[in-house]
Image (cartoon, one colour):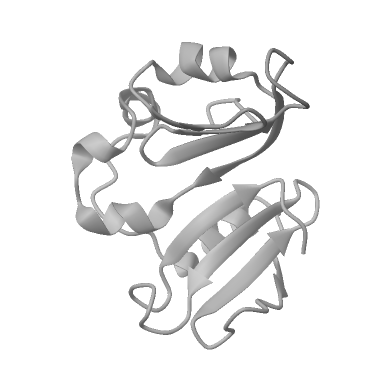
Length: 148
């Protein structure tokens, strides 16, 4: 996302995306919500450096159609995000770029969510399958890195 990945420090992410975020801190973990994007870190104890674990794109939030939800830096680079993104759109763009996705089991409830893994980047795409999480076929979230 704009070159950022899970290895970036909280300060470096804030330098990129700005200081308008929500924190979910504890002594050992930190989740930082930048609207559409969230980054996560862990550390061995208070005062120790943060080590990034993963980031996510909470695409399901796009169904609220709130233009302010998407960070201004991301909108400047990619344009408006007027609503949900379908998996058909994402998979077609990736296929055009030669980036394969493999469907992997979603153990919690496969009738409600399907998951696809990109082995080269370790990224997982969660796609709504039923009606509980939104509209079937919409991308729910993207997590990187994640395991199949």
